Length: 74
Image 1 (cartoon, rainbow, N blue to C red):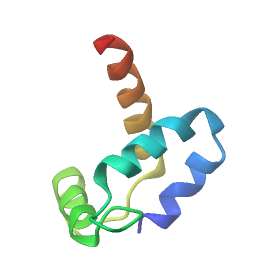
Image 2 (cartoon, rainbow, N blue to C red; image 1 turned 45 degrees about the horizontal axis):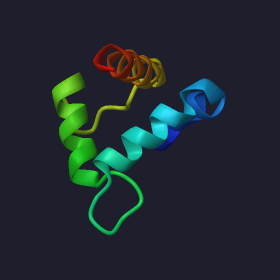
Image 3 (cartoon, helix red, strand yellow; image 1 turned 180 degrees about the vertical axis):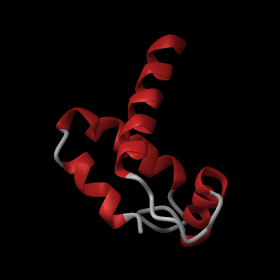
Image 4 (cartoon, rainbow, N blue to C red; image 1 turned 90 degrees about the vertical axis):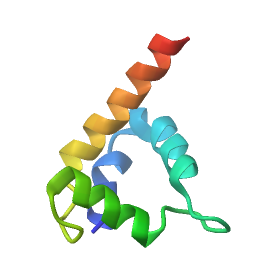
């Protein structure tokens, strides 16, 4: 589910720093990535189903939004 959404990030090096920040901010304790419960909760709130596929365009938009928000706060 999340793995397919990662490839557009890999192909856009400009999104890498924010993708790393996001991954670190949502990682499970002792883990390297987000927990399955977190991903299911996020897909439920975003798409209405915990089993929904993450739209790669939505992930890119989220990363760009986070980057813009970070620049506003500074």
